[in-house]
Length: 318
Image (tube, rainbow, N blue to C red; front, top):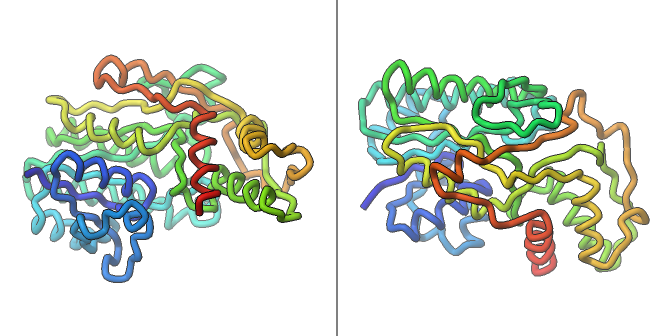
């Protein structure tokens, strides 16, 4: 039985990845900064809490990271932890950098120090690319990060490459474009829109205030993206991959689809507030996921309409 350690198991991707690995017969250790107090709400919703082994690990603390790897001796480590909000990173740049970049460095150093045959997946981000002038980004596209979050992710990405080349560690990054689900926290704009629209459908008179609705993103479905993570660690040679649908849409289109699905006119319930614009933001994010299809045989099946339907149906069901 293979052992997997998921750092950040309580988040969206951690919960869905836990389900996948358990289904494949893994012994899953769920890492959290304090596993004794974490309610693991997403794992409970999936009925998985009793099937994983919670473990306390603070990846920004090298001693904690080293001791955890030495004790568990996992076959695979999935590094999904760290501050995950682009918007919040402008308010908390130091916490964002430490939780992402230092956390990644500590895991790599612990792998080097213990010399265990561990395979590590690092959750990269499409935010690292910055503006690509509407050219779909692939694994060779240069990084031009435009937020503290993106800068931290870019730093972590290059740390992975450096340790892979310098010490022959099995470490790789999945450069993930936006992927959504009902487990997205309400601070994320997709969940914020879905939740507000559902409340309005149920009788609320509120007006939803949003920032720039003209930004374009590649939105996928998180439960199927974790399959790509797992496939990356099953290869003989570690490689980095762009994970995306290959289709980009405006936030306005997302809003329109959500309200239309609920038989509402979004323009009657949404206002654009310039105060909610970020200090710097990507106008357009688009991807070329050709490599992941050719090498891993993975392809996104959910499109934007499917993502909207899945999120709205789950919100209405409570």
